[in-house]
Length: 387
Image (cartoon, rainbow, N blue to C red):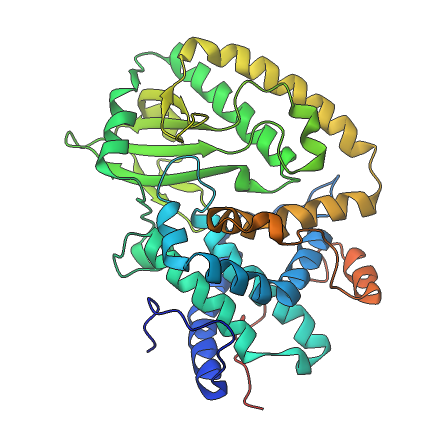
């Protein structure tokens, strides 16, 4: 097995080794992606053409990520970028990492079904090795690549961050307090889901962080609540915070984190076992945690609901093509935080669609979801055949 900590020189090609390493990582991802996709709660939007924009974005990823990743990796090695994500507020996180590899492989799956000649071992190796090196560094060098390998454990934050979150958590002693937290959490989750065009990545969970008294800390990041590179987010220009981090101290709850960045708990109603809650922001000059008073929660809920209502009306007024382009931009730019960490984001072209030929764009744009299958009994991602 190649050492994932040793990047290849830019432009280096070893055709036989490219094929070997690409297939090693395709074989790793295939059963995991199939299981995660099958287990994930299905969702069909009545408003936004989610399947269409996902396939468009993944096709763009297949065409364009290899060259973009080579530029990013040359500016800053994947290992350093992965380590940079080990702080609250960073979107170099579990789901963005998972997506780098799996969006590329999904795009490959769609496009090579149309034209097998598009398969490129060097391009696949470029993307998948970058993912592997960044993912292992993000996980602190524990030998695992993602939550799947570790039984649902994602603990990127150090003891100092955990201590800050726990010490800043106020006791939750009654149902009235829990109801306020429930309302706050549900409002922000729903708002970010719509802001990210029916995509769950506006929130990200990590944990479980086991505390000395047996309770566990679940950390939930809320990303980019306000105006960002999403051109439709100008509706949120008045949001008082861009990023929030919540520390939820749970008593008697088993917590696992998926590679989609969301928690799975037993019992399911984990907020019914909430014993402490703290709220922070990383909107600080150095990105450190700053406390947010809990008496601001109700005002935040009111502001978020107002912005969400305006955003919903704006989406309703969009054409199907405008929605697809917006949703595809969300997915395609999952790589952007890595480019920002490397200092090259402004040198790369994030417009989408760009590389997908017009006839294919029209084909993918017409998808409704009924045409997409999980892959049957065969491999979810097929290996690259020797040329």
